[in-house]
Image 1 (cartoon, one colour):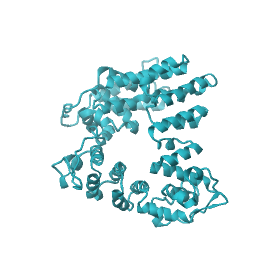
Image 2 (cartoon, one colour; image 1 turned 135 degrees about the vertical axis):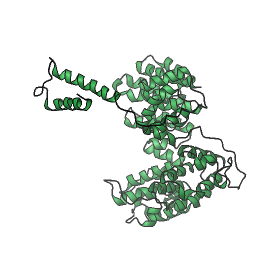
Image 3 (cartoon, one colour; image 1 turned 180 degrees about the horizontal axis):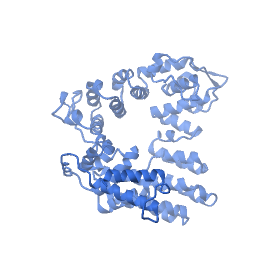
Image 4 (cartoon, one colour; image 1 turned 90 degrees about the vertical axis):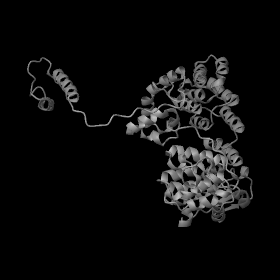
Length: 485
């Protein structure tokens, strides 16, 4: 009996059941059926003729050092499930040192990155030449080809006003080969480095080929223009408000919102002037009744989310895109008074708009006042680093352990210094005696965000198990960073 017919017989028997079509000479027909099917599967695979194919070219040699053996072993443990939330930190630190992952860990790491986009940004560096070679062989890992292959390059500064792109001989207009021919990630890295060195040259380079870029690339490049944003960028961004891609238009509007003297800022200020007034110590609001094409062009999305009214949605967005300096002039009160005044009927929308504006415009004064009224992680991130830690520590000391506390701490950028670390550890000790079952996320956050060099202080602070758990995680991170240095 040839292989295909034997396989068909096994399939037929499985479909009708061994009771109706028994296998001769066996006491356990179900087990025998499965065993024969397994053997036949191997036979069919082993006997298949290979398709015509060219031999795979060898992976190119590497050009950067591999991480140390202890660091590689720790990465294997993390990938295996030990402290998996530390994987992004391991990748970031290793990439910052310009190291690469050993080849035997690449498949597992790339498989995980295929499922989790958040860990991809550093993999172009860490995977090395072998990783890109593997990505060319496995479509599931093809995302790696879009990531930058080296840390952000250093780009020499062009002469003032030259508007030329330094550092290259190939390509059009003096642009280097990495810009003309590089992968998307390498092009983003080059533009970011050029923007940091010479904002005008970066903008000029981007403008020359803007119409030929893909929508995704246009959006990614606009995000890079946020660095060293200035009024000189306004004409380019104003033109981008007419882009075909909504994400590009929204990003352009966000950047123009950060320029208080822009034409978009002036248009938004003119719109809201007739909507707000102070009467009897309250802020009276008359929200817009229409959202015309000109308003949409300025970044106001006409269609509200499900469950939100149109006027509410338009009002919130307009407030968010209005320069914060408009409100004290329009309403005659400083920010601290305005955020505490009663707002008739539309207070939730106005406060949400002010919060968004404080974040977009990076205004510490408004963020400080708004945080005092409604502690939000986004507002905390606007404050200068030293103040952010002080404000977060004060909030931790006076607030109970709940979801809002966890969200606020999530907005406190790592590493946490001594003041915030002390406040959080004291909170852990306090709560461990009253509701120890509620400490899980707080102890994990502390272990992941506190400066790992403070592990000794945590060890000595208290013998309570939750504190020692934090100390152990800090020591794990301390050793991890040391292995990668």
